[in-house]
Amino acid sequence: QVQLVESGGGLVQPGGSLRLSCAASRIIVSAYRMGWYRQAPGKERELVARIFRNDSTDYADSVKGRFTISRDNAKNTVYLQMNSLKPEDTAVYYCRGSYYSQIYWGQGTQVTVSS
Image (cartoon, rainbow, N blue to C red; front, side):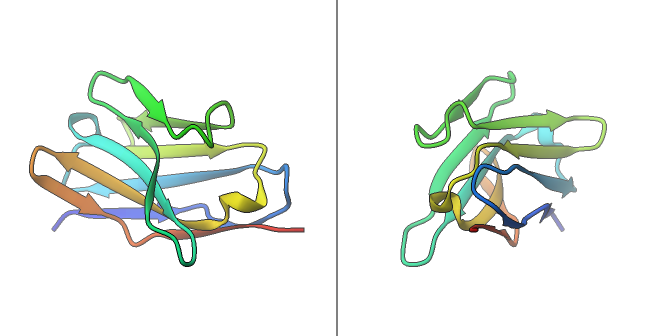
């Protein structure tokens, strides 16, 4: 079965950095639209960043210039580099892969930004 496994979350101080990883099995990340979403307590899940098959990317306005999504095809893994983290970035971060009607989610990884 398809698996998307996130890692790299944790506790970081404001202004710090984290890199999230999403390792995929049974799908080829380069063939899918891959994205990172997040959900804070009491809020809806929202798009953070996406990378398309042609390597183009887009970002939520709230993370532009701070976060970078990338893909390592050899490792079949998608990354989210998060810099200049703010307390409002605190959330569970989810990896998502989609190909037409096929949609897969990871289990999520917690990111907490606090002093």
